[in-house]
Image 1 (cartoon, helix red, strand yellow):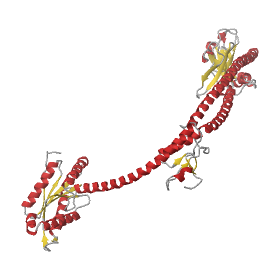
Image 2 (cartoon, rainbow, N blue to C red):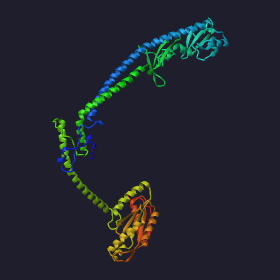
Image 3 (cartoon, one colour):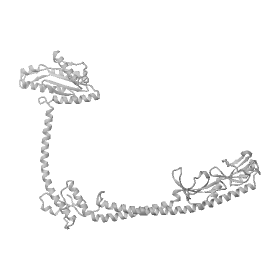
Length: 538
């Protein structure tokens, strides 16, 4: 074995006791201090490291959870103080500006004409729509933006009203009585946005007007609300009432932007936890490796022994602790197992040789049990087994199948005249001739005495008759010169053909009857049975 290779976790070393063993024995020493290598999942070192990892992970997770919760609580408290102040300041500014526009419009109302309304609308950027409402709340004239008109007040006093979900309108009476009509001025959304917005707003914060019934009531003691958006995200909301508009000022900000500091803390905590886990894992591994290396070397060597590598050993440890005792016991065990394995291998080799001889003998016996000893064709037993399998196949597939029963004409007289040896030779020569005439898919067997049988799969009755004629003609045209008598001998055969019609018994009976008819017809001929058999055993 080449030097420098590693075995059982360390470099291979020649055992000092190798000189004491018989020639040819080789013992490989296992280094008890192998270099670093990947630990198996079920090892003691892995379990210790896993315990340290889990304990460190849980501790870091608890500390991080406390930090994140504290940050979240602090930030939520800050938002609960900042948002109401922002809403109060913006609502006061908005209402003051809208009241100022209302007073300016009431002090100088435009004339009741489209030209006057258009001129007044162009003179200000606070409104983008003016409408005149006549008696009976009928629309008389409109210029600018078309928007839903708010409900008119019951008294003839200037007022503000919510128009739609996010718009607002100034209402100016056209006379001392509300029945005389109203001038309705729709505030520009850009103007509203300008007076609602502030350069000091946090990122993503939005303010807009909403109807009172469009905002769900807050739970007692809750300033902020969390709701899901149509896009599937979440946002923080808060609102304050605007009595002058009978509406609310709604504040909205995406949750991810409102609590961005919390996510930053989570990210930093994750990085810190990861660093701590890695550091503690490395320290735990180094400490554990120094403790379990001797045990690991012993277990690795034992594993190799269990896999059949008996030529291994551990350096002798002089200490009297458990590891030293285990090491010495292990070395004695491997030495004894090595000797016993040599004896077992020798006995096993003998057993393998004997088993091979027995297997060959069984194969010969099996072949002999299904082969005719004289003609070397399959015998009657094999034919019956093969027929059973073919009948099952034909029953499933519906394919045709035919049988040819063959009998040598006047074989008894020929056998008596020329002797049994000549008869046996004729049987062998005839078997070869018939075997050359059939197809690879057909089965030729010696049925008994001077009778042969052919099972033709996937063959109709007409095809079987053609095959039978081919076989009969081949035999009739062949002259046989026998070895003992040196006489020229000719012979003929009679063949009965039948097709399978669903009954095994009828199948044989039809072929047998056809053979008898061929004999009665003068021999040396082929007779096919056209009779359709029914019933009988399957």
